[in-house]
View 1: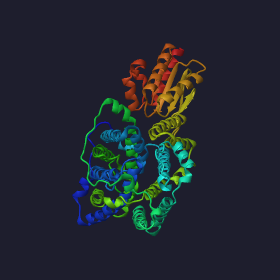
View 2 (view 1 turned 135 degrees about the vertical axis):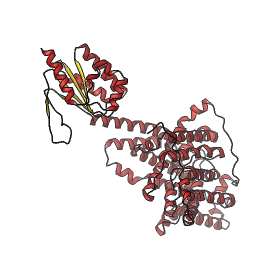
View 3 (view 1 turned 120 degrees about the vertical axis):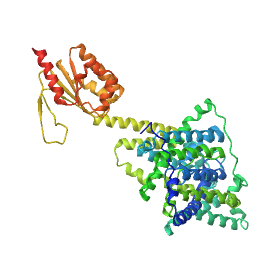
View 4 (view 1 turned 90 degrees about the vertical axis):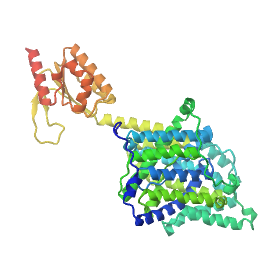
Length: 565
């Protein structure tokens, strides 16, 4: 993590085009066309599931996909709307409307740009895995729940956004299942599942949509009772014009209201895009610039809402499709956006004919793939702390809200991490002798004798607020007789925070009041610098801060022996 230095913004497309060849373009062209075709049903489905029209989903994939490829730090990343955002986008629209969503997305884009400018790209990768798995599984279950109305053809209006009331309404209206709609949904789902078994290169979602839409369109005129609701029935004729960009009215009240949602979008987008880039790097052997990727994602999320779009991030499934089909530079991602643009301009009337049950089947399959149930099962063999973080994050995501889930999940993970650090930080006391090599791998031992009245306390680990309290408690519990000199050995203290310095200062002052000398030993440069800024050297004397235990014991023994005379 670096808060200073030059701006780390180096889009991959610049280096990719330096030695670009026609053969590479052919590979990128094929990959871009395939990914564009695969992205089409997903963009439409994610748009509808998020509470906006299919047009908005496509516009997001076109503009966002282009910007992520043109400005990002990953050579093969494909950007667009993803399933992870469905829950948070739907909730924002329900609470604040489309204008609120646009403002929250723009603010999230600014947050992502700042994360990249402050070189925090690598830090995002260290968010605990159980949290990522927990809210991803929670999102998957939530997406699955939102599709039951269209999959079964229940025809319900005003379905609650909350998980439990939603299922309560479903169960109380189970008798309203529309058989033709259910058949369309089941057939669509079967095609999606079977297609990869025939060929992994075939886009199951697109083939399902084409076959089922064509079949329904041919059968409906002859069997009116088999008619099912389509995109056109719900949304009317979809426009084929890219909307003109527009601005927003920002004020502090709006910013304060939408900041938590914007933070959630930013963190979720950062995690998903960097996770996708990491997976891609493992397959292609390339190296993603995390900071550039965050800046690129941020710019995309600043611009997309100006055209009415929803949040954008890297999509793992589409990125892997790009890699599998030969895409190796950002040109493939740009071609994918161009393919979607051509479809948007010339084929939108055909999209009106797609049954809603077919799109529900696509999203049910997406939710299954997102659930990561095998990973969840594996984590249940991990320590209980990991399990608790996963379960809490999952429950909060499903029952309450994704924003709350991420915030509390991160807080719980931090608390558990601090507890582990405290448990692993050891504080030992020595009274008569001390072995210099104790706690190291060396076989050379040198034992130092301690004069009467000299006590040594060794801290093994970071001296932060939790350990500072633990050290203070140990000091109080181990002091039976009043010593003349206290040596605090800090050779294994990598850093010390303000609470540690404060507790150390209190210990020194109380010791001096009791005429007890304090000597610090093995202080590294970083810790020494902090102590100097805190004025500890003035309190105990600069010569009482030693770089090695031998010097500290020699000084302490001399002080104790002089006091004994």
